[in-house]
Image (cartoon, rainbow, N blue to C red; front, side):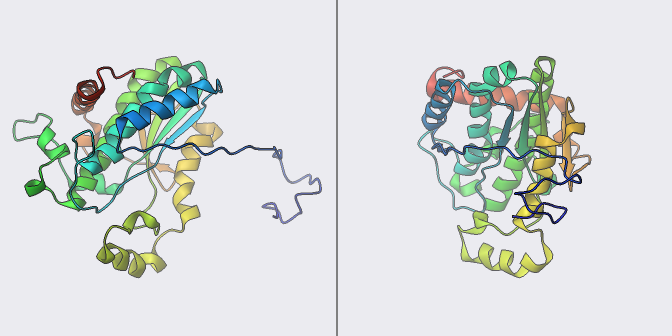
Length: 262
């Protein structure tokens, strides 16, 4: 594999200023539709006694039919938000002990096209985990992506004093991946859009930037698109809504497992 400058990896090059490290990749099982699985994953990771400098919350469900998880919550909401929320809660001590550490939450520009508050301005659980009659797949996805930014911002406010930062990112519109697999219409739309959208590598760039760029050290509570900071929607910037979502998420986990710490 050539270096960016075109030279071979087996030889030294005065124009390349990075080291070649031996790396070990280990896969671990995690099912975000089951809070107990998240708990078991966190316990298994902690047992390894390794530092955690970067945590990327990237998994997502998109355009899926309405269903409830075994925890009794709408699947898109649990996979895209609550499962990640619980995972970070379980690993936050490891993150803090590993400081400086970074959390990157993959959101979407689609967060702009929804609302999760009721007419009184209060967080509406019925919007987050709707009944089958009130469910629309795309809206559920948009709401979960709004939750991602609110969660990231609140996480940064809580953990940044302990050396852990968090940022939310948008990877790219209709980036072609297996996320569209739940319905042939989604697959058709993503296929038609593929020549005009980002590649997988381009889509990962903003996540990698927030996770690894030296200039991002110590910076958080922001939203990035195309490796540039931009303002999310007004509701995504609401500290009140972020706190309410955090409290609701904590309660949802406690109701099902007895303790947010597992």
